[in-house]
Every structure is written in C-alpha cells, then in structure tokens.
Image (cartoon, rainbow, N blue to C red; front, side, top):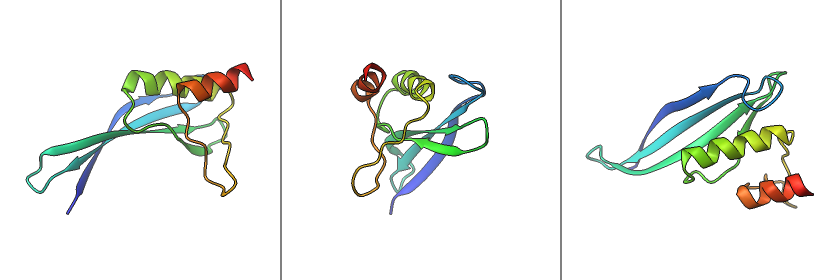
Length: 102
C-alpha cells in the first residue's frame, strides 16, 4: 500500500505578472515503513480573478526549473493547449521557449 505525504514548499503572491499566485506542493510517496521512495512537485497557479490552474510540468523537475518555467508560463498568459482528446499539454523548457518564439 502506497502512502503519500503532501507539504507546501513554495507560496508566492504576485508571481510573474498581474497578481498571479503560485504555490508548489511536494508529494512524497512512502513505503510501509515510512521511508520516502519518490518525491514529486506539483505547481498551482491562481490568476487575478480567482481561476485556479495546475501548471502541467514534469513532477520530477528540480524546483528552480519548475519556478522559472512557471514564471514564463504565467507571463505567456497561462496557455492551456489541449490535444485532440482534451488532455492539457505537458510543458517543458523547450515547449515554453517555442511558445514564446512562436
């Protein structure tokens, strides 16, 4: 049986542009003895009018990369491209830079 522990590790108002709030949770998967097996990061963004979004980025990326990429994503207007099935695009540094350049 897998157990998860969630801890908020980053919370910032006015992150990026236009009063967006960004927070990052660290999710730790624990073995039956309580030892950490895997850790993942998930970023949430709240826009100025209160819409909450998940920044769909690799949960295994280093925190600094996730924060920098989240800032770029916010500055791009939090684009949420979806594939043909309606699943949101998974962002990485290359796709964000392509979005900015395109």
